Image (cartoon, rainbow, N blue to C red; front, side):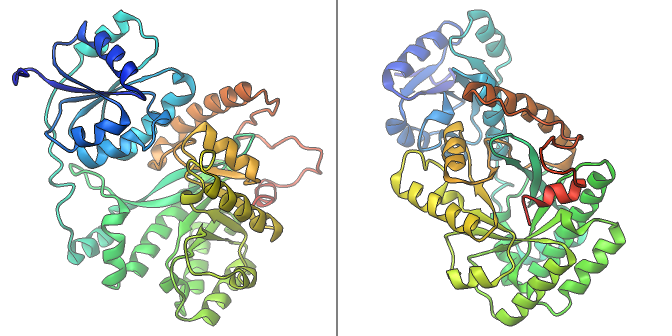
Length: 430
């Protein structure tokens, strides 16, 4: 019978053989009640009683994603990760763990030196962390107050060109951030904002913060754009174009740095006004992207009519496309449609190096996903950029690519005539 005074430890690897082997390594350093699992057997274990520590080996190679499984079942458990290729996988794992708000105790290479494991084990603190506040119901008055206080803020997910790894921009994603409370994900408040008539206020609050950040980056000479999700309701407002124009003037932002994302799954109630407003935005110099392509209601004729500059292929057709032929067909054809219409093609949901390679093979030009970077506050972008430049060099080296990694503050070298930074960036989003 397990000793209830000892910590409970779940060891998850790709197979039971590896799981038992890793368990024997851990038993040398930590006395505990161990459960060895592979992905087929772990689901029922994690849905049972709370555990203290989950040990995962090569999490990016296991499907379904064990980190997402932990987020939904054992978020209070501490996490120890082993990986056979930490140079490439390590930053991706860290970002995914941060996005899932798991408690990461450490990451170790495989094979692992006993002294390295001993250091991590001495830091192990088996504590219970409640997430009751994180899942408490949210009411419309709370959402309204959060918008008014400005605590619903943009976090920035990188968009990088393939295969060079050059950073071309970021997508701004709303996060509810208040000191002393867990970060609230958008799926918990966006739908409330939509049903309670608060979505326009939310969109404009986040957009205003995005323009302030974009102004800072432009002043620093960063040739990046920011994509911001804009509700169809806002885009069908009589005053939206005047509002965004006034905000651009107030911040001094060059309009080519802003891309308006329109979610395909939202049905337009006033198509003529939507088309007119999108056309005005394009005339002003803003980019316009169709988001979540392939999941909504738009027809190819609407895609041809609207003045889009960018097509974003939904993650449902990108993640694991290298393993699933049906996804691969949709990915390839979506990229072909976008390129044929002269649009920049962005592949969302790139989680692994295999996703990266498959998306690049499809013709997609830009990567967005946890492989390159999770959403982050603007203050963490410099640190991410340093890490990404190192990883991009490793990725190119592993692929045998001779493509240089340009300095983000320097112009790209090209056989093309030299053009200004914004015109150079706009080659991706013309």
